[in-house]
Image 1 (tube, rainbow, N blue to C red):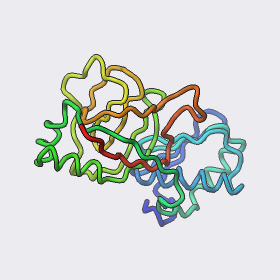
Image 2: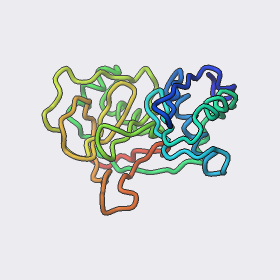
Image 3: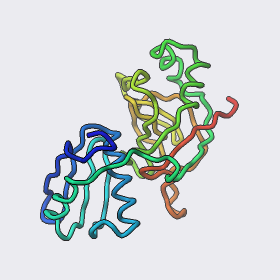
Image 4: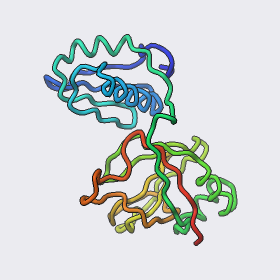
Amino acid sequence: MSATAPARDLRVLPVGDRALLVELPGGREAEALHAELLRRRAAGLLPPVREIVPAARTVLLDGVDHPRALARELAGWVIPDLDPRTERSVEIPVRYDGPDLPDVAALWGVSVEAAVRIHASARFRVAFCGFAPGFGYLTGLPQRYAVPRRATPRTTVPAGSLALAGVYSGVYPRSSPGGWQLIGSTDAALWDPAREPAALLSPGTRVRFVPEAR
């Protein structure tokens, strides 16, 4: 499915009596469908849906009054490409001081300084959230910069650690075990229950990392 063609390549599966799971060819298609669902709901063009939950290649619609009718409707949609002008934007100050940064630079075949420039110049988008409250899976790095997870995960990763795994970037909102490659750190609060909303990042948010002096 291209983002500007009818949604003929999506697959809609029933989940229980009042939910649908939409499977798509890839992450960009899932992001585009999620954005279009939110747009139509805000405009009053979507039948009642309690929750819209994106993932890597799926979108879950829960609390649907008439799931069969909505499944038929989805098959005829034309899904536009993502428009960054309509999405919320967040800047996160970051120190590129992670212990795995030299290893990531070596995997990319560049210097540490060049690796920092590559990552900081990318324009990221929160594709979906999970793993821990406030953790967003950010797309934006080209496929050639995908990196493997660590062979041996760390038992403790500090809160605020900027990390890479596969094509995703993410910031650990709290201290936890983890196997991602750590390339930096930030003092930004990714999850604050006293804040509204508690999560700094939500699906569809555009993110830019702003380097600070190490």
